[in-house]
Image: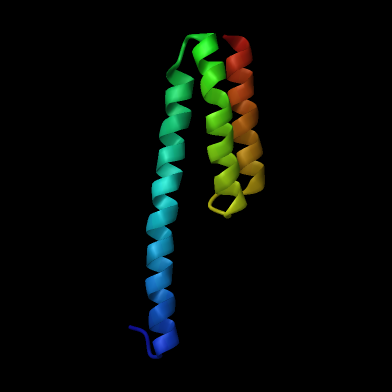
Length: 83
């Protein structure tokens, strides 16, 4: 339990941010999964900018590391080029 008011506030903020980050990370993972399950190249190319944007936003707010974001984007590009 927090011993100071500032520590209690910090705990509340951390919990709110954790839930917020979890929601956006899960939403992005679902979008990536949907993109990878797509077999139509034109549909996948249409989805790609939105998914890239989601990945970049996660990296920007440090939910995922910049290198992980780059690796995800690279993998998606390779997948779409193989279609």
